Amino acid sequence: MERFDNKNVNLDALKKKAYNLRWAEVEEGTIPLTAADPDYPVAPEIKKAMADYIEDGYFSYTPKMGLKEFKSALSRVLKERKNEEIDEELILPVDSAARAMQIIAEAFLKPGDEMLVFDPCDFLFREACVKAGGTAVSVPIALDPVNRKMDLSHIEEYVTDKTKMIGLCNPHNPYGLTYTPEELDHIMKICEKYDLLIMNDEIWSDIIYPDSKFNSIYCLGNERCKRVLSVFGYSKSFGLAGLRIGAIYCNDKDKFDACVKASGVMTTQGGATSISQVAATAAMKQAYYWVDDFCEHIMNNRDFAVDYINTNIPKLHAYKPMATYLLYVDISELGLSGAEFVNYLRENYHLAIVPGGHQFFGDQSEGHVRICIATSREILEEGLKRLKAGVDSLIDKQ
Image (cartoon, rainbow, N blue to C red; front, side, top):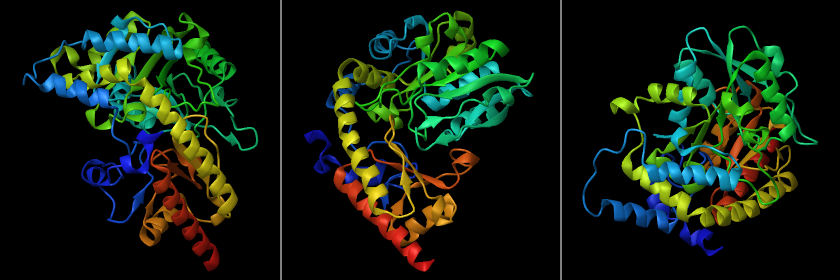
């Protein structure tokens, strides 16, 4: 697809604007396959909608509960793409999916409460819980490398009388896996048995490879999902990270009202900007063709990268993700921590990737790294060549 050719990666723009471990934060000549953010400009329909909105020069307050067009568009998208029945009146736009997680934690956790957080998993679950005054309890979720299944059998062992919530990252980051209906039912039964809430992060649910399938927890039925508080965002699928736009939604009015109260939108202390909602609305209404084409592009990148690593780089083992544009790579045979390996590559081979370990994904991810493949084939190939050169040099020294 032409729109994802290397010529459409504007490095001059990225080096000025792409922060969070990316092009604007690394030394000149370094390739950052780091934060989950595409190297491509957004779909033209999004740019046009933003330009049209600013034409008259007015940036007035938005409705406290968000633009109706945004809420209506998301309700439709949830039904058409994920078969989730969500009333648009139970959708709240907020300033990013990360902020949505924080709002949910603040609405339902108090000091002394515990939240079960899968390990490994994105650190924002832990951060949301801790900042709300709760205690994040790590639940090791081992990965069977043969059948690519997560071991969810021990979750119940970590439930105490203080447990109030479970964090569900679906699709899972960093494993890149989707959940089966049976796995979701297992998690739900534990929550029903102990009356636990579910913080359900679906920010990756648009990035599903054509050879895989996404199952939302709502496949269990809306009645069982009244304990589910969902998070969605537009950074991964549409490249809108810098616009800070996300949403909270659920199908229980009382729980939704608690989120609204915690968000500060009714006092104008919180909420999503007008232009961010306009951009996201255009994305949902007009730009899913871009996402679907992008998924085909990154599937080709995925297949190439996984084969390259497993065939050409000794002592490294890459898992083929079902979702996300992130590769989870086992480096444990090198005998280095993730941080040591990442620092070595950056300093000696001008390649930046993300280390496993407590900071980003939890203790169980030590001995692994995460590589973002949301770039052109040319940039990816050069990055993988540098990865191989770094590994080869380490092996020669051993």
